[in-house]
Amino acid sequence: MQISCLLCVYAIWLKVSPAVSESWNAEVPLTVNGLAGSCVVIPCLFKYPGAERKTSHFKGIWYMNSYETVFHTETSKISSTFQQRTSLLGDLGHRNCSLKINPLRSSDSGPFTFRIEIEDFDKFTFGHNKVSVSIKDSPDQPTLSISEEMSSGKKVTITCLVFHSCPSDPPKITWSHKGLTSSQSLKQTNGEWKIISSLSFTPSKSDHQKHLTCTAEFLGGKKSSSMETLKVKYAPENVAVVSDYSVVEGSDLNMTCTSESNPASHTYHWFTEGGTLLSEKHTFTLKNVSRHIGSIYCRAINTEGQADSRPIQLNVLFPPEFKVGSSCTVDITGVTCLCIVDSHPASEIKLWGADPSSELRRTHEEKHGSLTIVTLQGALGISDIVHCGATNSQGNYTLTLQVPYSLIHNIKVYISIAVVALIVIIIGLSVWITKQCRRNAPEVTPQPKMEVNATSLSEPQRKFKDVSPSCYGSQHVYGNMVSEGPYEEEYPYEYDNDYEATYANV
Ligand SMILES: *[C@@H]1O[C@H](CO)[C@@H](O)[C@H](O)[C@H]1NC(C)=O
Ligand SMILES: *[C@@H]1O[C@H](CO)[C@@H](O)[C@H](O)[C@H]1NC(C)=O
Ligand SMILES: *[C@@H]1O[C@H](CO)[C@@H](O)[C@H](O)[C@H]1NC(C)=O
Ligand SMILES: *[C@@H]1O[C@H](CO)[C@@H](O)[C@H](O)[C@H]1NC(C)=O
Image 1 (cartoon, rainbow, N blue to C red):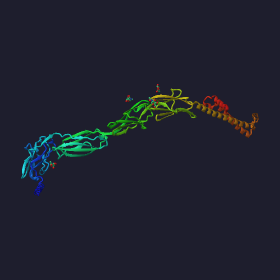
Image 2: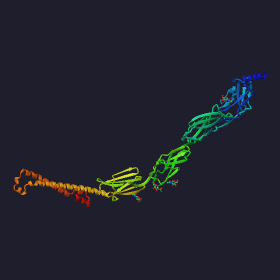
Image 3: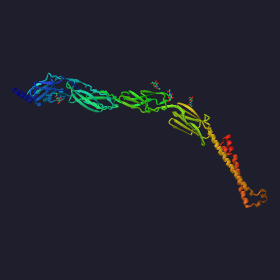
Image 4: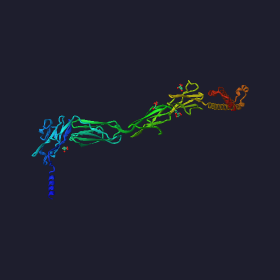
């Protein structure tokens, strides 16, 4: 009971004055890294014996080399080389004796010692806990790490590590690429801090091979940076066929499929317009090129995806060929000849008759794709044969067309029949008119009588005399028609036996 009560009392005493420490002690690192021109914080925590005291009861002093006053609570006591450059960061009442030197000079290497003076109690110099500052003129490079593999469109996070010794004014970290940034500060040993800055962004194809930089700017303006080249994987783009576009029919053509991608495309496919797979090679040889090949495209494939080129239309060259439908026809209006030439490039077409030196003039020329259609229209009899000569860069070819004679002949016959029929009708008509005239003639007084009694002519007799010249007149007209033969002039064809036979029948 007694023992337990004693323990109770001790516990209560502990609770009342929990901050009692047994001895003088300072916790400081042995060395702190510092950057000349920037700031450094020497972390410091001290212990003193006895009960906790008020802040106002403390005087903190830092010495360098045991004699130079680096800091004093009474600032006037600070040595001239450290005036305005030093301060205590923490609260001495909370045993925090951290010293900040800003800006740090190359000569501020220490060793530094802390001394505490507590009013109405005691003073102590922590001579066993010396701190040195290792001073660098330029900051270390940040550590930039791209751990993830980058793919276009896939979000990544990149980190940049920066070490420093000035937690009150840490360096500012900036990135060369836009994105979401965040940072974390971690306390290390020996008064050093680590800042982890993270950049999150979604890379695109355009980021491939770009430089990414992380820059730390320290208090006082010194900077250091690290750079990495981004490697962004992306599916093929700008796929294109590289080839000669003009090719002679029947020859071979080498075609290469190019693309932009990372990594490089590992497979290529070649297709016709209709989707037939032609090849799986990067460079494909199209053999025996045909004019009917149509368009061709290629597909590039890598680990990230695939893409197609635009279809290319080959310019297949071939010499002229005459197509079905090239012929001459004849009708009543004349001769029509048609030359239909298939060639690429388009042919130059010449027309001539029996005499190659005199070219026949075409009536019309038109083009439909690779076809050139030349029309010649002429009078009957322009020529018995028509030659069509077609020439392009690939060769030349001449076609001889026959003007169909029999048809021309038949037309002659029809025209002849028509002429003969007309003559017969005219003759018949004339005969009839003549007969009509003769029937009226008996009423005319014989000529001798008329001479005897010329004055006894009656009125009706006079009238007849006036009419009769018209009968003779018509005979005269008929005579002229026969003798002048106007039909023979218009159709100067020789009448052959067939014609005579027909005439005889008529
Ligand atoms: C001392 O005080 C400063 C400022 O309040 C603080 O940042 C630091 O962490 C303290 N140091 C220790 C050792 O407690
Ligand atoms: C096409 O490629 C083959 C081999 O790849 C080569 O032997 C040939 O000479 C090439 N032909 C042309 C027209 O470039
Ligand atoms: C080329 O193709 C044509 C038909 O398009 C064929 O008649 C000819 O035999 C082919 N030539 C070769 C060498 O394969
Ligand atoms: C037509 O081709 C032959 C050889 O195929 C050539 O000798 C001739 O000169 C050519 N004629 C024309 C008009 O190009």
